[in-house]
Image (cartoon, rainbow, N blue to C red; front, side, top):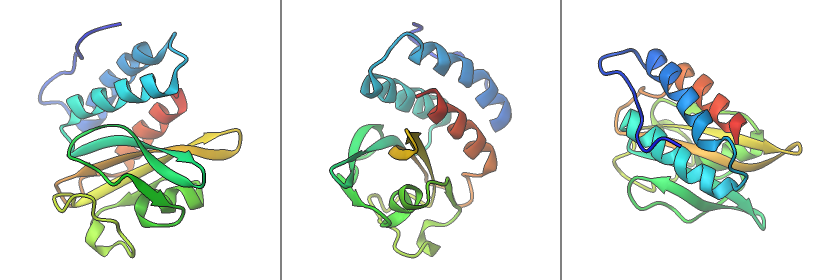
Length: 156
């Protein structure tokens, strides 16, 4: 396992993700523990992107419970259907929110967050966890992020 990431500077988001994906595959290959893999994935994405917050919520006893993350202190529990994370859990679909203030029921864990994407992790036909990424910029998270994060979630 590598101890650091090798990501080119001054490349497009798409190119950055093309470089990052095989490195994330290397981080999770051979490791069966989901929490350990989530921790490394959150760290790798955070290091490569500098997004405000990158982390996971895990479905436990009918709630999303905070899992491994990188960034400011976060909300600990989220109910199904509440906020962007709860919407992704409810719909089993990736949620891209260009402006969190315009999202009905948004849960403001950090007032610095301006845009957000949440990708559900499906385990045996049910959402087992979600990957949540927040940015300090409006409209920063988009379909390019969605494609990459969906591939990453698929590795877990």
